[in-house]
Length: 91
Image 1 (cartoon, rainbow, N blue to C red):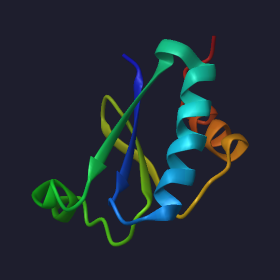
Image 2 (image 1 turned 90 degrees about the vertical axis):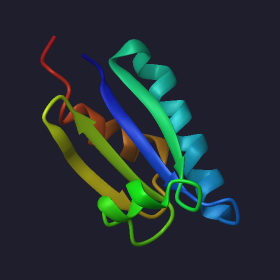
Image 3 (image 1 turned 90 degrees about the horizontal axis):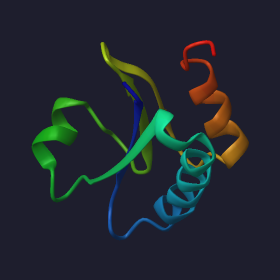
Image 4 (image 1 turned 180 degrees about the horizontal axis):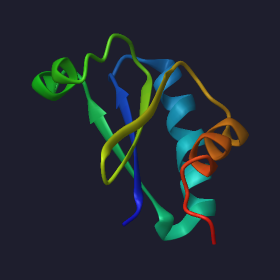
């Protein structure tokens, strides 16, 4: 099962657009091992509150057993790849 990389964003967040680009670049390089999804916190308030999302952008990496790591702020593509690599099964 692939890892899931979720971007919690808001429509007025310029930093979210930068984060989206980094996440898209990283997931494109990893193919089907990672799935990218985006959640607008204003439209999905219940999910955002349940996960205690305090700021946008926040990126959450999840696996079969739930949340693995989270980070707030704007990562670059190498940082995203490094985060994911720590949780990919050995080839």
